[in-house]
Length: 122
Length: 107
Image (tube, rainbow over all chains, first blue to last red; front, side, top):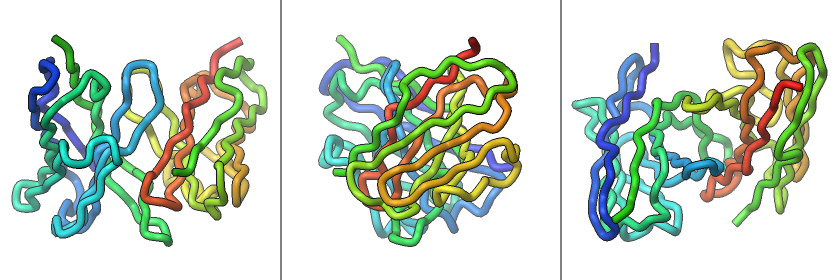
């Protein structure tokens, strides 16, 4: 059974940093692209970042470029999101998601974790 | 960036009804569209990908259609478990944009 379990969500002050983790099991983690998707309170879903199987390619939504870093450790079956210079508008539930490729090289998401809540507030 | 617009934002229906949710893209995305179901406090669940392909294990009362800029998700006979929020998502460009969601409520 595919499982994705996020951790690391917390309350953090504006300008602060936080690292989210996602532990994967039930599939061969190293063979899949992985993504982070977030959902602000009462809002829709927003793709945040994704990473290639070997970590050699990483892509981000414009609003987090230069502040967030996605990474992975295939030996530990884990995905990470390092979030720096956090803003109030980053407040959201952050989901890790296994990503499947469409023809043009972009992705949809077939398995999701339960989410980690990040609250940015003073 | 491609914008995805769902309609309606909220839909009230009875158990047994046939319902249709529409998702419109601001430019053509071919058939690169997925639909997800999300229940309160839970992660989204993939229902349909490539506009009309049913994900393994998803009930056959769910179906998707469309291409280009207009897409629909149809539930042929609503069951109590189907009352949830539904999201569309394009994967034709690197923005991987989602619609704002359609909340399906019991009438």
